[in-house]
Length: 160
Image 1 (cartoon, rainbow, N blue to C red):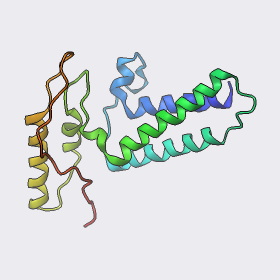
Image 2 (cartoon, helix red, strand yellow; image 1 turned 90 degrees about the horizontal axis):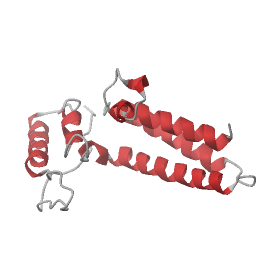
Image 3 (cartoon, rainbow, N blue to C red; image 1 turned 30 degrees about the vertical axis):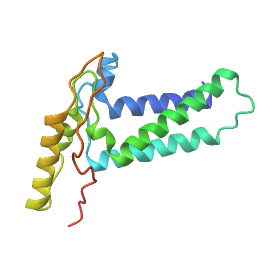
């Protein structure tokens, strides 16, 4: 197996571990015992692993690559970069899932979010309520229309 194929396999395994529900849906049952982990520790670990894959993929000498391997490298870098952006910005915790429904990430994240005080707890409650109230209903024919305003998407400080 070539170096780019090995890195692609590593990225695929990392992606399935980070999204065990998708792995099960795709027929890979190695992660059936897991649920999505949106804890800061797991997200940071996954981000580090993605950076390692991207660094290794960019460092591979492409001189002997055939056209398919060049495409594989470009797609690997693109996909890993997109996944890293989703983790670093925490956008993925509020993104709709076409199979489960809109804004399910917010609900999964809610149980792993510890408010530092009553004000922060109220802000979290308001944000979650907004997502639930205004989440678009799945539709093949229409584009969802979000109201103006909305939550103050922010990363919650865990510093005490």
